[in-house]
Length: 161
Picture 1: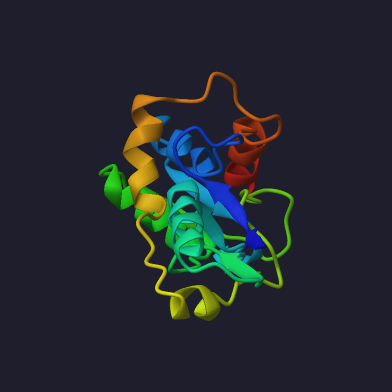
Picture 2: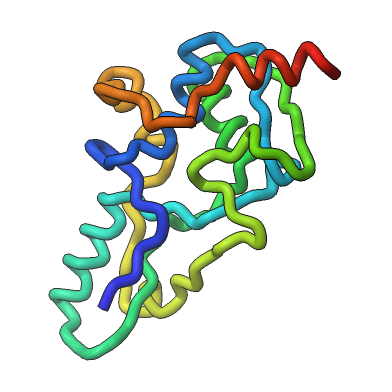
């Protein structure tokens, strides 16, 4: 049995990393991050899940394995990765408790999967969030998930501080 976490990658629905990428493409001057940017829900690239499936096929047996990326970045790290990858600078606004800034990887307390059992089988990750960023720029989702881009509320909060 394989247990992925927040699946992402080419063609993933919803495209969770799009929450950050679209804000960069829209040239947002600030990114609001709930939980002071510390929210994390371990990402699982579809290509990493496939690599683990291939490895398990070569080493049959009964087991439960967590299928996840090599690292579990928090929202602040993801926002920095996306901005740097796309040559954008924005102010990081770290909110304590807010409905604003709740990105698709936001969970507190955080969820980080133990992938040592998969590694012990010889599984080697082949992808991460950075591989998805350029793909999303070239293949933006057809529609945006409801509630992800309430720029009016974000701008109102920024004006009020």
